Amino acid sequence: MRHIAIWAILALFITGCASTQQTTRSGFLPDYQRLKPSDTYPDTALYVSEQLKNGGLKQVRTIYLPHFEVWLQLNDEAKVSLSPADLAKLSIYMQAQLQQKLSVHYQVLLAKPKELGPDVLTIRGAFTQIEFAPTEMEIRDFIPVRLVYSAGKSAYLMATEQSEVVTSVSLESMFYLGESQEPVLMMSAHKEVESVVKQSGDENAQAVKAVLDIWIDNFVTAISKSKTI
Image (cartoon, rainbow, N blue to C red; front, top):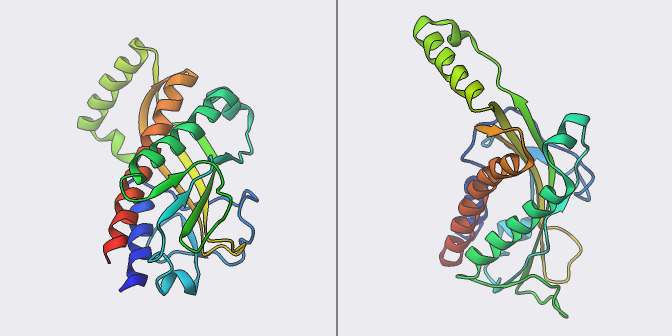
């Protein structure tokens, strides 16, 4: 059934990384009151309209894909981790990768078309949190075997001037069908992965791209499959 397709999209789009029970409310989405915590997917709040549940994607032939926006409330440490130029590159990267992979299945427009017909899906999104934090030792780190591993790993990291961090990325997104100003889907999701990165903007940006690649690949796979359901 068609409404199953949208849940398949969400399932793939928001899975693939570890999570820590948090989402953002940056102000990017028009109405956070309609978002409900997902019972199935951690660190995800969703709103799915009845239109989308009842087959709203069936008619889609074209996807309008503006640049992902940046709605970050940065603290001092976050400002050091990624420069405005790095953030702009991440937005360009997200759009380019989605365009390349969605173009196999849809006409993808980067500029707003003159007319948003009923067969046009607009996907807007924003980065709402990007953080890098030192990985803390857990209880299992004090088991002797694990302690030897951690000690050896720490020595390696120190020798190469790298630091083990958790890269966390939060995204907010909304879908519009045609000319309607009413979103048919809104989502706020947060994911974390452990990475070993150097203390530089370039390496930090690459770590974030690793998270984005998971979202991009899963999303494209799911939305392309929805055409045949």
